[in-house]
Image (tube, rainbow, N blue to C red; front, side, top):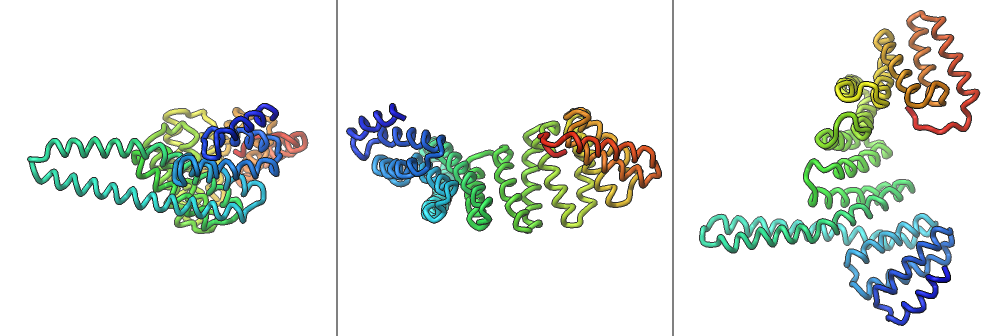
Length: 355
C-alpha cells in the first residue's frame, strides 16, 4: 500500500488525463478490494474512470471495460443505484455498436456486389476485401472483451433477480460473439447456455429449451462426447424436456448420451451420471426392470469417482434400493438402505459435486 500511494503521488504529476495515473489508481483499487476496504477503493475507482475517459475518450475499449468493472464493484458492494447508471450506459453503447457494425457489414456487402458486376474493378475489389478483413480484426478482440464484460454483469443481475437487465446483457453478448466467431465456436455455446439458464429461472421453459439445444449442437460440433461440457449440456436439455412433460425426448437424449459415452469413455463419471438420470426416469415411469442395471452402473460410477463412503453415494443407494424393493429383492434393498444411512452418519461436512 505504501508503495502504491507513493506511486500515486508521482503519477499525479503527469496530469489528470494520463493513462499512467489511471493504471496506478487501478492497482490501488485492486489492493483495497482484496482487503475488503471498499470505502477506500470506491473514490479511487471513480477517479480512475474519469482519468481514462479524459485520456482516451468515452468509447475507448479500456474505458468501456472500466465502466463494466466499476458497475460490478457497485453491485457487489450494495450500491445498486450507482451501478444502474453505468449499466444503462454500457447497454446503450453495446446496442449502438451492434447496430453500427451491422451497417458497416451491409455496406461492405453492397460494395462487394457492385464490384462483382464489373470486371473493371478488380484492384478495388481486392482492396475492399483487405479493408474488410482489417476492420474485422480490429474490432474482434474488443467485441469479445465486451461480450465477457456483459456476461459478468448479466450473471450479477440474474443473481439479483433483475432478469430483464440480465437478458439484455446476455443477448448483446451473444450478438457480438455471433458477429465475430465461427458458427461452431464453443464460446457461442456459453452464450446460449447463459440465456437458457436465465429463461429457466423465469419459467420460460420453451425458450430455455431452444437455447439449450443450440448450446448442445455447438458443443457436439466442437468437443468429443467424453468432455464434461457435452454431458452437462445434454443433461440440461433433457431435464428441460422432462419439466415440460416430454419424457420420450428426455429418454432419447440420455440413451444417446450413453451410446456416445460408451464409444469414447465407458467408465467415465459422466457415463454414471447419464445412467442415473435415465434410471431415475424409468423409475418414475414404473419401468423398474429397465432401471435396475442403470442404477447399478450409476452406483459403480459414483463409488469409483468419490469412494464408497462419500456423501454423494447415499442418494444413489436409496434410489437403487427403491428399484430393488419394487422388484421384490427386499434383502438387497435393505442392505443398500443401511449403507446409505451409515454414510449419512459419517459424511457430515464432506464436499463434492452432486451426482
